[in-house]
Amino acid sequence: MIIIIIIIIIIVGCIETVNVYAARLVKGLEKYESNSIVQGTVFAAESIIDNICDDSHFDILNPSIKYSCIKIINDNSTSFMQKFEGKLDRNFNQVKGMMYELKRKVCYDDVNACSLYRFQMGNISSNIRNKCSACHIISNDIDVAIKKNMNNKKNKVKLEEIVDNVCDGLGFNHSPYSWLEDYCEEMIEDNYSTIIDAASFRKKLYASRFNPDTSFSDSLCEELFKCQKKGNHNAEL
Image (cartoon, rainbow, N blue to C red; front, side, top):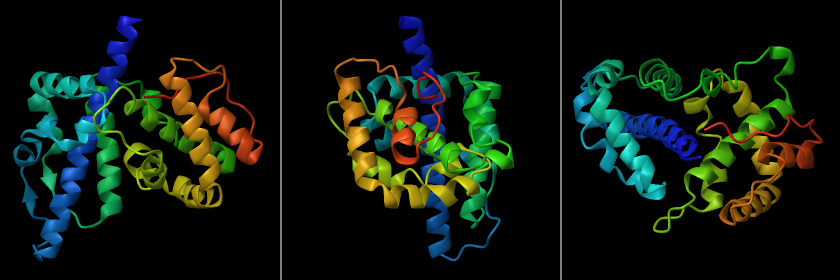
């Protein structure tokens, strides 16, 4: 059990470290945009990665994830920064695609912290890119966000914030992701209160250390769209 927990922390730590980098990069892009800096300006990975593990983003997560970030940066700083050297681009959709690819390269290829499946959930045949497939992936992302914020007593993220931001985060976590976005906004908008209630109930189950027989995505997608269950599984962190 201890080994499993450590592995999960390393997986989430790696992904969240790249997430923080992505957030800092977007802020950098907005700054360059407002100052009318020429597109293609070279950015230095060192300036963005500096003190990355002290970022306030980690305050809302399990404290162990921050320590995982520190270990990942200490053990893989050279290869980490090499992956992040490049040029600024004002196309935010390209930034999302770039950050997804960097997560895969850093967390799967270099650090070997994640399974390849973690990066292939959205890469399914076009004939099954439907409402139910999208629901399972989106619900899984919500479930992962809930789990990441458990056991942090200081800075709790509201479930509404998790649900409100899930669609914007699809491009950072999945590829291709445009087909998911097409379903996500409608799914959240039309079923907002139901999703919040389901997420709240699931969070209470986790807090009581109860492990449900049915996954969050199975229960939610069956309730919303009568989708077929994918089987007993935990959210892929």
